[in-house]
Amino acid sequence: MDEQKRRKGASLSDIARHVGVTVGTASRALNGYQDISDATRARVAEAARALNYRPSSNARRLARGTQETIGYVLPRHAINRTDAFLPEMLEGISQALSARDFDLLVVSLESAGDELDSYRRLVESGKVSGLIVARTLTDDPRVAYLSEAGVPFVCHGRTAACDRHAWLDIDNEKAAADALHHLHNMGHGSIAMIAADPTFNFARLRIAGYRKALDEHGLEERAGYLQTADLSAESGAGAMLRLLDLDAPPTGVICVTDMVAIGAMQAAREKGLAVGRDISVIGYDGLPVAAFTDPPLTTMTQDVIETGRRVTEILLQIIDGKPPTEFQEMWNARLIKRGSDGPPATAASTARQRAPQGEGK
Image 1 (cartoon, rainbow, N blue to C red):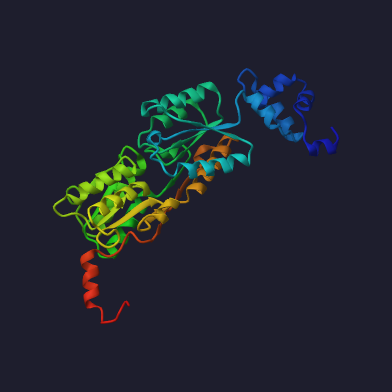
Image 2: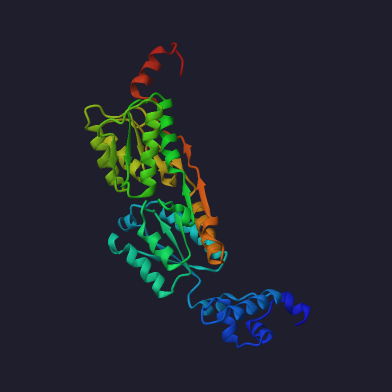
């Protein structure tokens, strides 16, 4: 083969001719079929490297017997439209896929019980090259299944056995602790949390961070101060009402998501409380809508679009042959302070009484 053609890249026919095998054998060798001997696979692979073979997108699809498509099964709670950051997540995924001419297959569940079955159907159908697993569980059967099936995947979040697979996660324990430190530094001593189902690993870790920070400040977890919501605004409102009905309601509330916080603020307003003055509320996610609530929501933020882009880049590298355990990344959330938090009402009142006349005007 002449140098000009080598630089341009050989065809599959060139590889087959060079090794002395059929085109079909060369294709199967390059794609790891077990009916091809190790010696033949090695010869074909060496020829491909030497001749600068670059398979086309269509050729790869035909050879692998699958589309160059990434699968994303909507998290089980998203069937109730409670996952408000989902559009941004999908935008980030799509941006990364477009750079590689891959497609995205999004699967919606009819019910939460169909989730694992949806993964099985995707894998057995051969429609996807890999999957992104969202909202990981501490003990996650989806991860166990995909690991056993040998299918490329990456988790948005960790599991209890996260050392054995690829993942990108936010340091949820630190984020919850940082939110409590922030409230405590403003004078709050009675701080509650509206959490999520702790079978979700992110929820378990945020609860752990909340409790760790309480302990660091010498605060006890008061009875009724840890409520659970299903990630919807409606559920957040219900949890806030339960907190406000306590004999000693909290002055600060940390919410597991921005949507939960939005519902919690609405419930507080309905009780006649001024959010940010009578009660402080902190969310989590950094959703754009949170900047336009009344008052604007203080939140622990993460870049959801960038997260979607990065988990997709990781998955594509795994599909290309990189070891999954090379990709285990922890990111930090950061506080965006807006108007939904402030000193406790009693502390703010004392500060105003002690201020010299005319101060603050």
